[in-house]
Image (cartoon, rainbow, N blue to C red; front, side):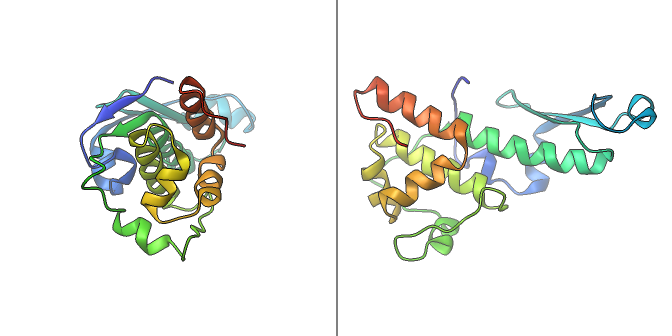
Amino acid sequence: MATVTVPDPHPACLDDATLARQCRVTFGRGSGPGGQHRNKVETAVFVTHVPTGVKATAAERRSQAQNRHVAQRRLRTKLAITVRTTIRMNRFRPSALWVQRRQGKALPVNARNRDYPALLAEAMDVVTAMTFDVGGAAGVLGVSMSQLAKLLGREPAALAWVNRGREARGLPKLR
């Protein structure tokens, strides 16, 4: 996945209506369960975030509405992983969402939680700004290094991206 840099705010943090205005949505027929219904109705959903070109699809459900919801969720996660916003570390403060979700040095959030893509995007932006120093990024975000590594590890593509950046700088991989 190629990384794209955009101005603030990060697209994964946008409200549903604003993100929807930035996207092109198309429908089609998908493979999978559904029998005869599958070949007659266009339930597959293809979403493209026009400013960045990031794409997501969903076709596993029989309902177009359910597939649309799944595709938008996948798009937010892909945006969190592939799109970076520029952070000035001398002025950076964790977002209100980050501060609200943080409990001491912990950040309890499930990968299926609605807030997860926004938190992941913020974490990855800070890790990038800190040249992949995850411990330093954790300190800036006010969480422990293990909590930040756990947040990144909930999405394998995010962890792989951070590990590639760490390897390129001679740092050990996160587990």
